[in-house]
Amino acid sequence: MGQIILRLDRVMADRKISLNELSEKVGVSNVNLSKMKNGKISAIRFSTLEAICDALDCQPGDILEYKK
Image: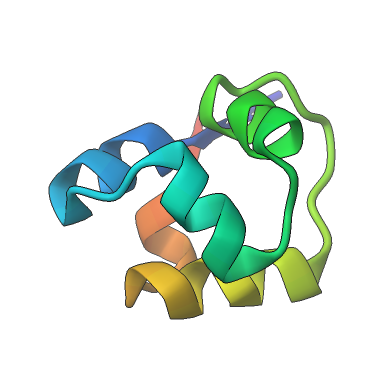
């Protein structure tokens, strides 16, 4: 079975945006974004993913990666 890997840290680094700044733009707590950034979550709401993609000007595929 494969695995979904979050690449939020990479996209944030590419966009030169801090966790605090992204948290303010998205409306998600620093703690929850930190968990996403470190891959410590098991689910993400589409509304949260949409807000992150909007704030980072990216596609969901830039943040999510599937590995077999």
